[in-house]
Length: 212
Image 1 (cartoon, rainbow, N blue to C red):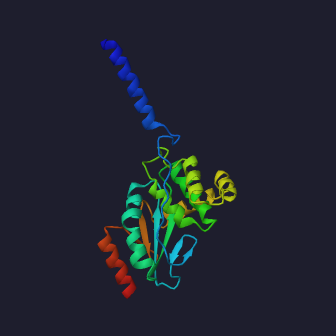
Image 2 (tube, rainbow, N blue to C red):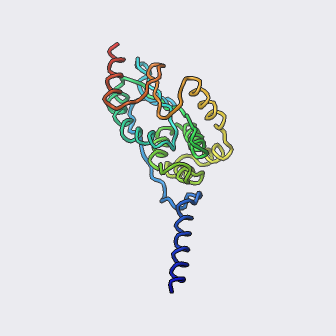
Image 3 (tube, helix red, strand yellow):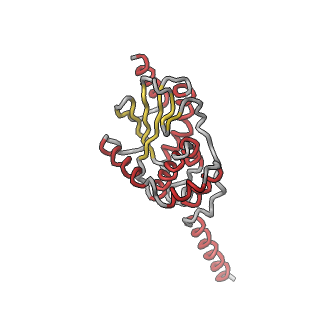
């Protein structure tokens, strides 16, 4: 009897390990959609008043846990208090370095940008973050996100599957590295690197730049 129970336990453990490490994305529920809540002018992946005197750039990776936290806790404040009010422009640039899913997610977002849907897709990717290279941002799930956002799949699918923006994503990483980016999220405020150290400090830096 003990041997039988041991065999059953071993089988259950094997199933558990397979479930936890499968990379086909099937262990995840259908992706959800999200919105950045931007009401200001959008030009590609730049949001905000084009006449604003303060430009903020975020370099990020779609699998980065800290970037996900920044997206969920800080970006909504920036959008509400600074972007939608016309004070700053906010731009996201790819620094995809955590693995294949990071790169593919960045490519998918660029394909969405071709349809003027970058920010919706960007927010949706982060809303479905679930670890690094575990399948949460598999090709199938990224395509499912595009479908849920009602993108033109006749345009999106070949763009994504053919890697139309692969070079641009790689170039963005190289550009960030040349500018001194070595972690995510990294911000640049009016061209100067800023190491995020909390929302209150970021507000103070932005307010000082606006006052200047």
